[in-house]
Length: 332
Image (cartoon, rainbow, N blue to C red):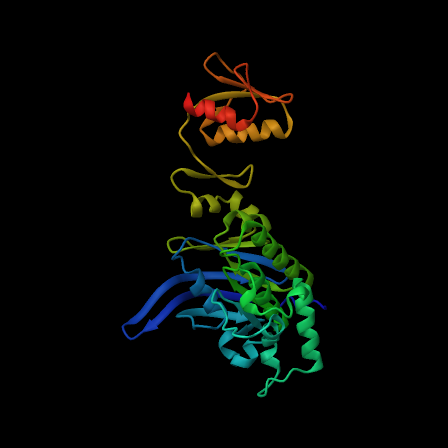
């Protein structure tokens, strides 16, 4: 498939998001400025109640901003008709579609609705787009299955195929990895990243899968009611301290050397770990989990653990597994 125009991204300035009610305006986010770039996977991260879903709805034209500007493809979002906007932005929400007696191919074909006119008849070109989308997501073996019989992961792939069939330069997904097992989360993220890179799509998703998003996203948007919106690559946000500011809490810290968040535990003691390779790495991880700090200069009070050979030893006593050593230290 040809790459879509990279310029057809989303830009917003001094955006105020929220709702207009009979009692007045309820502001959710304010002073938000950023850009969604083509050919990149962007993850929107933030705590519950930060306004992530409200921001997504505002950027996709599902609700108007209270203040500020939103542009899609360098054109004000308010200047699009609903039909025109549906050819620019594809949206995957958390709601389950009403798919009574519908198979996968029929659901994916609904993505062609912006192009099929009043009668909704698919042309040969529309059919090709549907089959192309099914192939891109790797669900040809599911095409004739009833949507009700699918797992959560399979259903999410089908919804992504539907939005690909819609053939828009911008794709926005609200919590696409929610309720999936870890391998399925990774598969969905890899799929979206590959699609954005190969086709030049602007892909934005909200997620609570912090570690996975930091590993697989090209850009990250951090959203918080008090701090507002901060954007950048995962690495730049780590170097600036933004990740620590947005997600650091008592008992949690961001380790910039490993790129991971760590739990801070009370110190139970010190341990000297000899050996090398995976056995030593996993032993150190297990000791850290129960509060033992590693030392390179042990004294008599420190625990000594050896990971060489076929068995582990703790203070000279053999143990067959890491779990056995941890049990000894917990009961100590």
